[in-house]
Length: 125
Image (cartoon, rainbow, N blue to C red; front, side):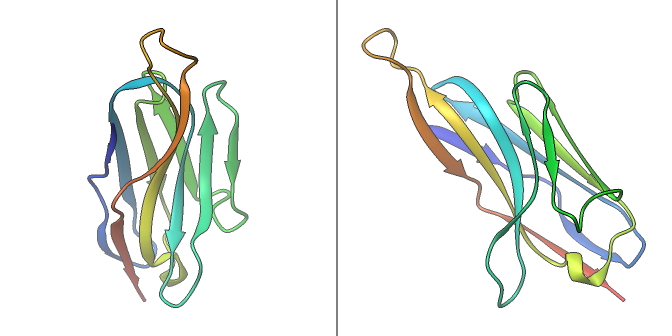
């Protein structure tokens, strides 16, 4: 019903930059919240940054001052600009969306949390 496409990612040397993007499509009524999560090898998935439809933003401490999250078009598109990358930023980055699904008036819009497939980011020292 909802798809998240995540172009971007790749490999860079420490100090470099990468830009991740996420585009949502499908039977969407609205998107109250979107975010990026990172899963490093051997570690649990953790929040990197998120943004809500009101424009409020949260960053993980590790991302503050280096990463910038932004959303457009009612959060149907979202980007994460990552600067001054460090080897510890390496991992698979997942787009996450809290969506309300359109029921076309049959009932109230229904909540659905959606994950993208993930895009790998490798930062070498």
